[in-house]
Length: 210
Ligand SMILES: N[C@@H](CCC(=O)N[C@@H](CS)C(=O)NCC(=O)O)C(=O)O
Image 1 (cartoon, rainbow, N blue to C red):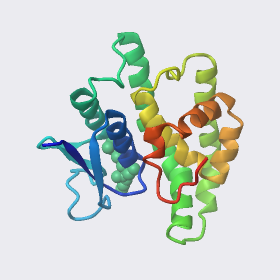
Image 2 (cartoon, rainbow, N blue to C red):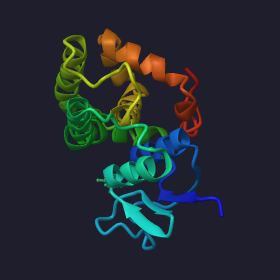
Image 3 (cartoon, rainbow, N blue to C red):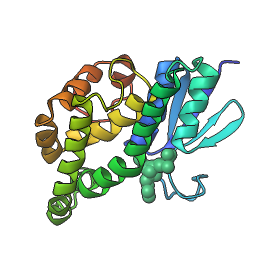
Image 4 (cartoon, rainbow, N blue to C red):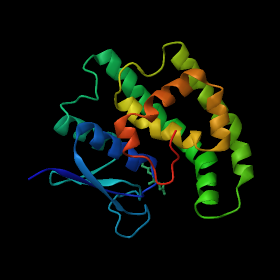
């Protein structure tokens, strides 16, 4: 029987998309079952999404989910064998998950989603308060990329899989677009990935074509 990943997650979600991208890269059949994080049926013990059913396993926590998919269905093709490169990749996944995502999501992305999707007034105070930290974080990524301390942009790996949706959701806000516009290396990396088939196939509903 053909393996299929059933991804339970919100449709416009950074981490749901991260899993979808890896499925696409692995050529693995996948479908997403719309499941809000706080739905009673969500099986994640800490109320997050996604939860993934695959190969008779219940998978959650995106790092372990995408490593499993890449190892079991893609011969580890998204993870460099060289330990030093692997350490850099893992560092940037951790930076994305621990620092960038929480900062961008709370301070910039969610206020815009609540405004654009749910029709609430734009929470300008939250955005204004977060902008200095958002700018510093973008400047850090830019400086690291320019000084070759960043993730390896010469080869698509799991660092790209995590960082693309995290930074793309920033780019889709006016303040984020302006901020990334001042970061040429970051903008060039995003631009190069916009047309990658796994990225195109997993665009969020309503995400404009670039
Ligand atoms: N550590 C989790 C994080 C997942 C996560 O933060 N997902 C977001 C959606 S992109 C979520 O569930 N947000 C709902 C909430 O925090 O209440 C993972 O790696 O899978």
